Image (cartoon, rainbow over all chains, first blue to last red):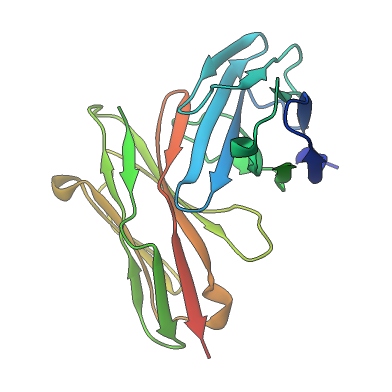
Length: 113
Length: 112
């Protein structure tokens, strides 16, 4: 199916563990993004990527790592999860974020205990 | 730096009332794009509208209308004759080249 999918949808992990959130899009959009959504903060940009092998930090990158070896995939890794990283994570893609809308995945609810 | 402010955290109205959601943005760029997204209780983010910085025409789409004013750096969203199905969190966003920044969102509750 065409679109953007995130996995898993729900994840519970322990403090200190490494966890990877997956994002896959089928449109071949050049741009991909990771946001976290927290009450009172809206959506905050963690990392974005303009193309394969090109990534850059957003507003809140600390504690996160991304990679983009293929255009369609943009995984987000929490190297050592902390409770403050408990959040809902959204992946998005866009043909051109300066001019076109972004399409969002369903979100991943991550709980760090 | 780009910034989007949605000062209204929560709004509650009764069905059929009109409601306006405020959005104020900050940017030093002359070329930029503004967006509104809706997040219903199901959680997904739905695109509503895009406006570029050179187009200050207001737009109307059914019960929805948007007022873009560069002089006040505002891009406000009005729902006319609100319905229960309009209950959602609404986000305003500002985009320039590679990144898109969102406001904190306004939670709209429409009561029957």
